[in-house]
Amino acid sequence: MLFLTSLLFSYCKPRTYFLCITNPSNREPLFLVCKLSFLLLVQMSQQIQKTTANGKEMLSNPRLLPLEGTSNVMMKQNVSLSCHVDSGSPPVRYTLFKHNKKVSTLNRPDLTPGLFNLTINSESDVGEYKCKAENNITNGGKYSNSLRFTLIEPISKPVLSSLTSQAKKGQNVTLSCLSVNGSLPITYIFFKGKRSISQPVKMQKREAAMIFLFINSSSDFGTYKCRAENSFRNNTKYSNSFNFTLAEKFKSTRPSAGLTSTMNAEEAEDDVIYAEIEPVKPEEEYINISVIRREDEEAEKRTCATVYSKALIRD
Image 1 (tube, rainbow, N blue to C red):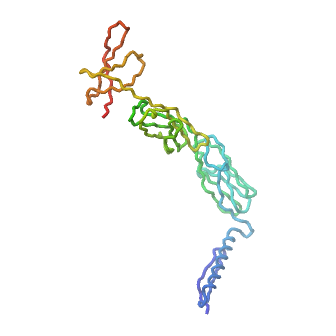
Image 2 (cartoon, rainbow, N blue to C red):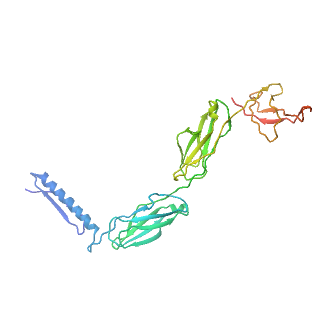
Image 3 (cartoon, helix red, strand yellow):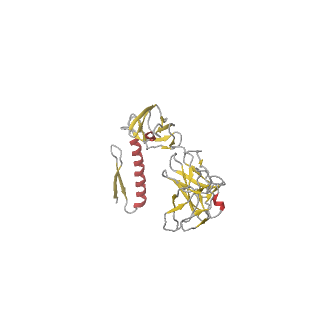
């Protein structure tokens, strides 16, 4: 006695119905044959879908690729895009779109790719791009993947700086490194002499990379530099050199009226003198400084007007 197992049909037009009947006493072998027959029928149906009565084959979806092999571009650079299909009946008409607007159309008598030449003149030229492939039997055409270029710019020489150029032993200091031009991200590395003193620091924004240093010995006042690089090839740049200098401490007396530095005040008026002077009282914000200038060896000392200088109070 035969047993009706399933009723299946293919997707081809006109539809072909597939009736699978097995013997209930020994279903497994017959069911396997039935299943394989159905899969073969589906495969044949799909092949029929790709062709028409006159033997023409529909196009596969095209692929859009940069001919240079990379999507990284520079301003004013000439680039080529390749749009091609793997299968289908020629002739083929290729159309390139940028932001869904038609750019250009090419006709090919065979399945050779359509090549579109572009120039990157502005940021809008980076895309998004798509292409469409059509032949005589493909209604509406087939569209490719999307492609977008990445605009890269060579980096400028980075600037290495610090909030202070003077430091003393036991002090924490900060170094900052920044390239004001160049496509992101930018990777920075800090050096003391020729030795790297930091891991690569990748900055996704136009911000300075920073490291913190502890001045522990006289060798820590040595020459520092930083290096910057991005995805632009062969464009590594080194910064200016930077040195910390030892902050000098001047001996002073502590009279009741204020402080008197023992430093000789004969330097030119344009000279800038750095010194650390302890305030009379921690809560005081200003220090009176009496400046004495010698006119000559025999002239009497005379006191200039009192100079007020704001002092930084440290705990």
